[in-house]
Image (tube, rainbow, N blue to C red):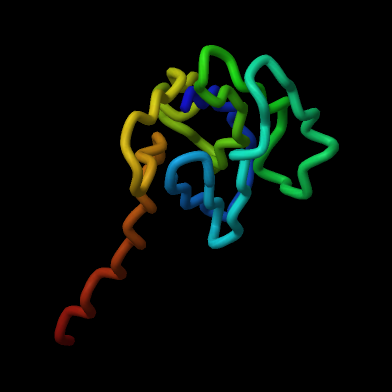
Length: 111
């Protein structure tokens, strides 16, 4: 599975996993098993805000584009992500920026 990534300013995280030709995005499964070799399914035909381009089967492998959410100041890896090639079933590692630690308030000094 070849996944191109399209960065977008969103607060909602994306969790993705693969099981054969089934792609699960935030708990919603999309089965692309019926997509024949050489065929393309337009993004408009897929009910998902995460899939932002057509899904094609080329040389037996699925090719698609996912929206990659990021915060206000994304790192270079998130703002300009490399495509992801998925060869095994399981969770898909997508680039992300760890949540910022909340700043702690200074302790009050005794008077």
